[in-house]
Image 1 (cartoon, helix red, strand yellow):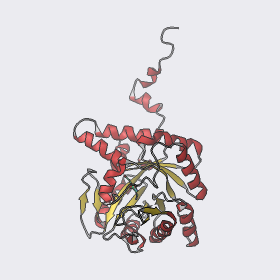
Image 2 (tube, protein in one colour; image 1 turned 60 degrees about the vertical axis):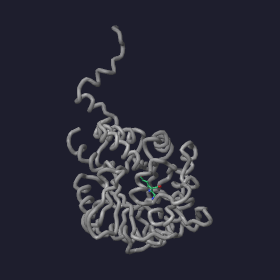
Image 3 (spheres, protein in one colour; image 1 turned 60 degrees about the horizontal axis):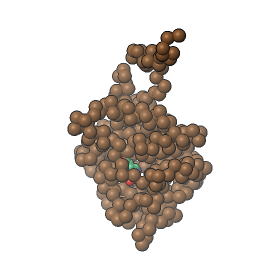
Image 4 (cartoon, helix red, strand yellow; image 1 turned 30 degrees about the vertical axis):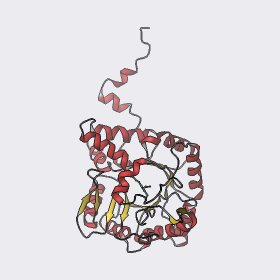
Length: 326
Ligand code: PBG
């Protein structure tokens, strides 16, 4: 036999062959589109650190959700930016608050588009933390009560799924219990199970005006150095009743996505967070990388690592491309 014995390049010779042997699929059906909604009556304002992403009034939000549905994106996730913030994030629990209003409007216009809501009070607190603060400490159990009210307000407004992102201990069990006791047994919980204390959330905090006013989130979000702890966090959330578990951020934590996927039998979500999005945008604006190719390659790597679904600000752009021929 001639040299070399093996020629893997044979199967890379044409696009048709490459398509036939492609292992990972990336299509609109895998994407969840995060959207920021405000209480403004009309209009939208661009988020400086996230080009092409906006804080949306409800009329503008409906344009986005209608477009997402048309592109075949199955779900959006909503983040509310309330008019008023206070120490307890009270606006988060208001049944007529920004997110419940947005849910009703979306469900009326596009009933088949799934509406997921982020359950966490950082966008609603004056101090920007994800929990109740006392003497500089973030209180766990006191926060769970507020999260319960918030989740219920979303469910009763018609949310299809709730996604707690606060990283308080015991929140999945608490929320499941509250939902069940109030007749919301069919609403799944997508838990931000392994959420790291990451610098890559910075543009989001700019968008939601939710940067902590003192200290950081390291007493509740995970340490970037830890792998086994992520498995423990995910195991606890599944035991407490999570239907889908999330790893966040995505690209710097592909190893965690893979390990969660291999260890558990529930669907895995990954969040390509604001900083991951904005880095690609910024480099592309400088002409240093090709935006579309960087988007596809990063999303593909997240799917390849084992994510069943990806929360990404590129959802529309990606769905648009995958609807065409790739
Ligand atoms: C908390 C929450 C955050 C993000 C999603 N949910 C912010 C944080 O933990 O500081 C970040 C998402 C992103 O960066 O795109 N409500």
